[in-house]
Length: 153
Image (cartoon, rainbow, N blue to C red):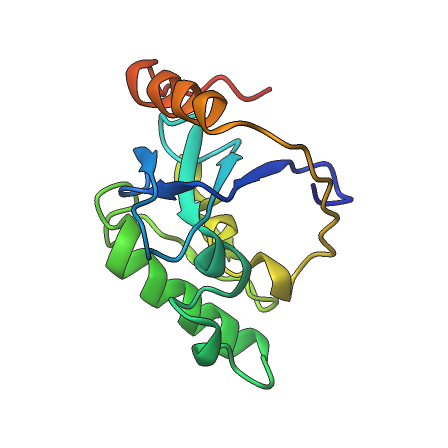
């Protein structure tokens, strides 16, 4: 939970299977997905982002830059969008860099950048809640079978 009001849920037994689908993690796979709701990410209500990409916009912690300028962060986010979000945020709809690592001017797709590299821009508070594997499996089923349409208010 970010202290600015944005809330995301990290699940350690659930993995992203693309930005709009989740699944239970397989043995030996780096665990974790962040489910986050966005005000403006096209028609979608939520996206699934692997935890390292959500925090640092990199696939592995070894790729996190030692020093991150707004230009470096924007470059990491652009690469993430091109690699994982191009079907949701096509080229030409992603907006332009704002100067502080944020995007602007992309209409209803302008919040895509919040799916990658949140540790560069926000303080993050975490609260731990214990779930069972059965509860996680029910959540995965619900997320994948329910309509993922914009409901954020």
